[in-house]
Image 1 (tube, rainbow, N blue to C red):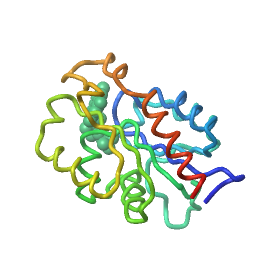
Image 2: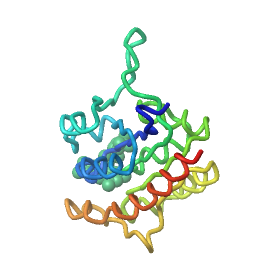
Image 3: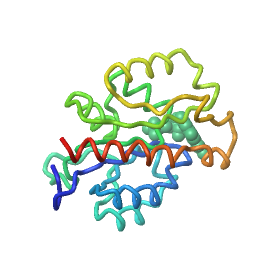
Image 4: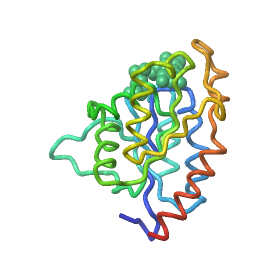
Length: 187
Ligand SMILES: Cc1cc2nc3c(=O)[nH]c(=O)nc-3n(C[C@H](O)[C@H](O)[C@H](O)COP(=O)(O)O)c2cc1C
């Protein structure tokens, strides 16, 4: 549901190094006209500055299901971006698992036909795993926009360390998100 006329974008962070770089991306999405909130998997938290993101978005970074009697503090999103999307979360999403708040929201989004752009960041070995390849195929068939093409967006090698974050295609994600902005504001 739009807030102050702005569509709501939920940025989902999974447990990989690019999660540390979310504040700059969130600021770009805000400039593009989105009201942004951030949801993290528990594994993502160790990479993130949640206080900085809360200040930037005006919403606490949520990572766990709320208690039944707690108010829902996040606005209802119109679209989702998963950045980064781990091997683990991509496979669980394709299997319909909902054991994190992030997965629960993403599974509902698939059921509601909401737009989702995900940037998977398996390493080159995990990218060849048959379960991952099947997950990519399933998610694409359900309409999830996966920015996964190792020829275009090279993947880290196992144990690459901090330089892995430099491979993340932030500029192309901003470009893809701009198309999403146009589609959502016209809808
Ligand atoms: C330093 C570090 C970097 C990691 N980077 C990635 C990554 O880029 N991609 C990935 O699929 N998993 C990565 N992992 C492993 C995930 O964090 C792990 O599989 C975790 O269970 C993912 O949980 P989530 O999908 O709920 O976020 C990394 C782990 C560590 C400790």
